[in-house]
Image (cartoon, rainbow, N blue to C red; front, side):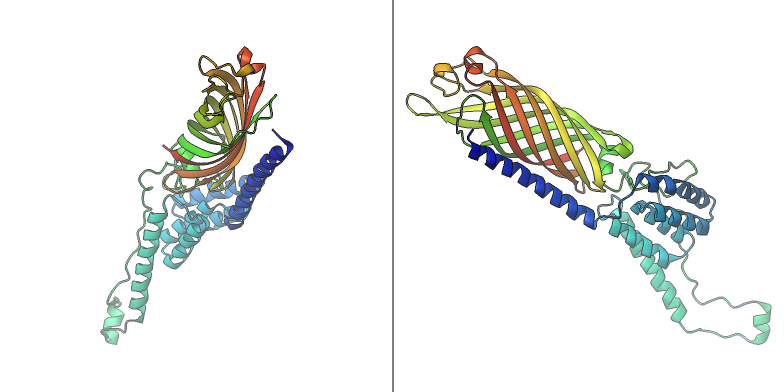
Length: 381
């Protein structure tokens, strides 16, 4: 490959990394304030105290403790807890306020529909109570009757529910950390499993994905100017939750990259391709509730097919009797953005190095390397 081609590949590679960095900057600028390990540790005692007070029905005390926990670690789920405690204590306006703040900080919350309905119900109750306050009295009593028994209002204000609703269908038990029972598990502060991208790993750890994009091949030993390839990968993996350290996805993937070349004798077009099967591991670190940065390592075999007679890749253009296997190593970096409905999108440039085998091929080309610029879609099961 010529120096100009290497320069173009490098510019494309680092340009995509710049786009990834811009995505990270934009996402973190609009997300909730970031948590720290020290903040999580400081918030934990206040959360546990708030949960205990909540279960005992001491809602004012639980609100105070949840607020102290939020001051140490601004996890959006704590706003939901505060709203729950205000609703239980009958302070409907404050409950609606904190439910709204929770949805603002966690726009992709899995329980968003339920919280929005709860806000609507609270607004209805607040409106009815305001109507009762503004309504003029409909009857009077004399002094003797007032001394005998107090008059009751014409229409009593509607009561609010005194028990919290059950978690929504399909949500993990730890997804809604408001302390519903004494045995409710306390969530990790700022890791809101069930209301953010982490739900995909906790309740839906199996991931299938598909990616496609341009690939730029380079053949060591020969400066062949082959056209850009189209690389397609299909894979499946299992997400291992490393808790505060991130996630590790282990799985397998298949890859295919077709291309054409011209024969040495007649300059005719012929088709060839690279078929690959790789075992891969991807480490993801969560920068924001819906955004990960990722690094991938893969190893396996790539088969080079279509090496017929008069091809430009082997000694004297001798054709191969079949697909030539090549041990291969893959390295990649990228960003992953989690969407609702267990979907995710990602951008990941990868470098694939394949060692050629076979006398005629290896003596002409010792290895094949590729830069792949992939855009993909994933779905958690």
